[in-house]
Length: 262
Figure 1 (cartoon, rainbow, N blue to C red):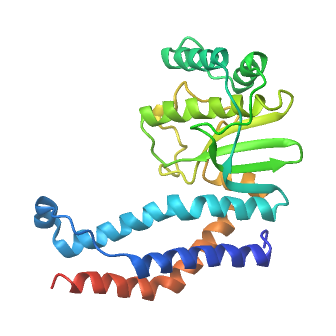
Figure 2 (figure 1 turned 30 degrees about the horizontal axis):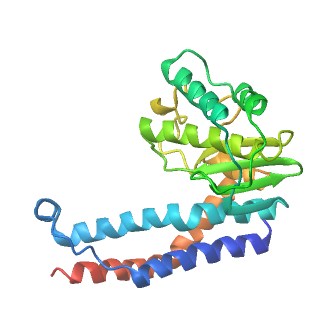
């Protein structure tokens, strides 16, 4: 196995604890949805709501923790919900707004290195302050290189992508306000490719992100980067193994949901 036995156990425990906690605490939505009920049936809609709730749990409770586990196993420093402190001066905010405007209008192509250097040249030393964009989903330090990731949903719309681009530009400025010489890389992580086996080419990415320099990492690429080796298929196998172990309990929950509407 590429992953250590200890790490495999940590991942298995994360998945089991998260799903079992959801199974124990979940109750069907109490809101009245007459059109959905008549079209799908209350029992089917209750099961759909449960699955949707599980999907939400992945975003809130699994991806960041999984990333932290994999990076730690590789010997990197990793911390989820990391607080990045700093201060962005008015002139640097203007530089960020200009970069974003030119990208959206198509006047320039995304160039991660140039964007970082433009911010590095302009940023002034700032106070160690909390910013509205201070919280990082996952921070990873590999030797003297710092990586800051926002782990986002698999199909952001154009407004969400614009907001994400602005956020990671501001992360760069916050960090450089504390140390202009540091190697800093800010990017977007998408847990899996919903278009597999086709490449992830969602039209909303176009023009905003430097894909050549991996400003957006999707699925296999992201998890392998954190692990420092190719562990993606092994990771899927772990999910499958835990799923098979939990299937009888999940099936019992589905049965319970159906019985509520008999």
